[in-house]
Amino acid sequence: MIRLGKSDEDFQELFRTQHQRVRRMLQGMTGNAAVAEELTQESFLKAWKGLAYFGLRSSLKTWVYQVALNTGRDWLRSHKNMAPLTEVEAAAAVVKTPEQQAIQEALLGLKEDVRELLVLHYYEGLDLKEISAVLKIPVGTVKSRLFTAKGLLREDLLNKGFDV
Image (cartoon, rainbow, N blue to C red; front, side, top):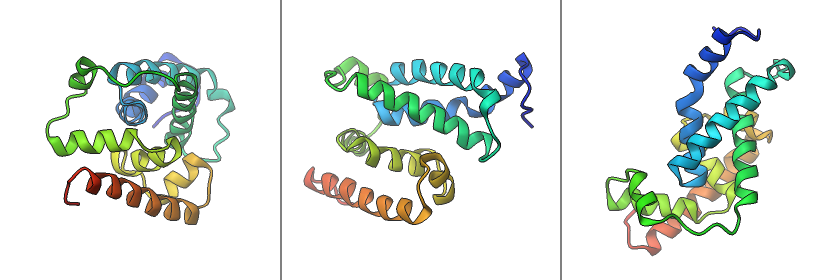
């Protein structure tokens, strides 16, 4: 159980329970493992500094995702014109099959808000209610946007010759 005090143990517990999830989400958003790790650390520093403002309106897990999501969004905005991943960076992402590579490329080709939904649902396994809390939109909107996002991803993969 994570207490809301500001001790080293509290921070270590928060980091231990949420680090992998946050990093995986940020890697899905950015497509870059090194950037995701850096943003994860930045997210946890922001979360730790802002822990006093956590108002218990959502779960701590949801709140940490919100902090990380905003950190990732800020990074994406400031790196809009960044060149695509180099071959070395792409290889470091440890994509095992052509299908996984195609999914990753298709995901990175989607608009940021569409990609966020897919990453939160499929990479992180959040349910519709949790995604609603993270993105601060109604569950019905999450359901509708997720349906549209899956269609866009499916269309892209079909255009690349994959049977989905």
